[in-house]
Length: 440
Image (cartoon, rainbow, N blue to C red; front, top):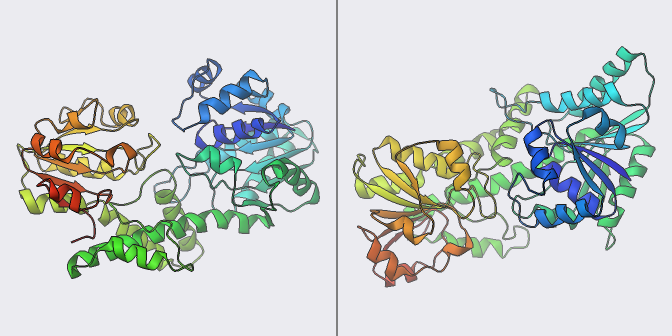
């Protein structure tokens, strides 16, 4: 198949590369000439493990191409994936300007039948707006060209997006006509040879499925974080509680880890957007409002623990911080707890030296020339002159440190662990005071 993918972010570039991997001819469009320059020169503008090899392999095979030419992109593919950003608007709703701009471009330049696929995370009813935008452009041209609009939400985890696309647990397709369904089934047939994973449904149900999935996962995280704070007050261990409830097959172990809050490009934005959708529909989503409030509060838990040890005024205090990305295996710092924690430490007069395996360049972009924030080349180097260690992201390289060396470097033998990555007995055996989330 000939496929066009509009947008070369996490979703667009992963989708395009993986579809090319299955033998399709894919053209990726982006209006950012710098991104396309990087891709054409063999680079990757985002950090996603394994993606560079897939892109390089398919570019070399002549199946994956990149362009900034909108007309070329529209005329290239029978299937047109829209995989552009839907950032939160001021009222929390998803901003659809990029999605609708892509739709209008397709309507402006198409000359034959197209299947227009919403791959971006969009509110319920967006497919209707995309249809209308394309129709307006066709009417303005006096053209009568058939087209279909499909909702095909992505379920990719940053840091594991390539594997998620190549081995999906489900493929949701919202469509209204047989031709579009036929083409989408053919497109995804190579990804489900083991067993049927395609779920065909109406457009609005497909759109809601994406938001519902992310909202459910965010709810599990906030629920466990609330329980963790209760466990601390009661003298219970949230890790043992997690094992106890996770062993129930009706609950399972996924997304039950207590920590210092969720972040990233999906959960915060999608929870807000679903709340706004409910408000617009006259139906308040009380649970999701609580999920959002709980997560906002959870990002301050580590700061509260630090203040309880050092006092409200942290002037003259210096902290080592391990982990800047919102989760491991990505450089994404959107809505990351580290941003809130660093800002709160600054507000109280402290300084920070941070280390992250891949997100330090992104941090420099966000914080700029902030003199109170410096960076270390190695985890242990970040501890030089620090009063305490604060762990915010659960990178694997943090899991087995030399606790004796940590104690020797720190001015105070204190670890504030926002991800519960250590067995508490290990740092305590080395003489460190170990403060985690929801454990005695």
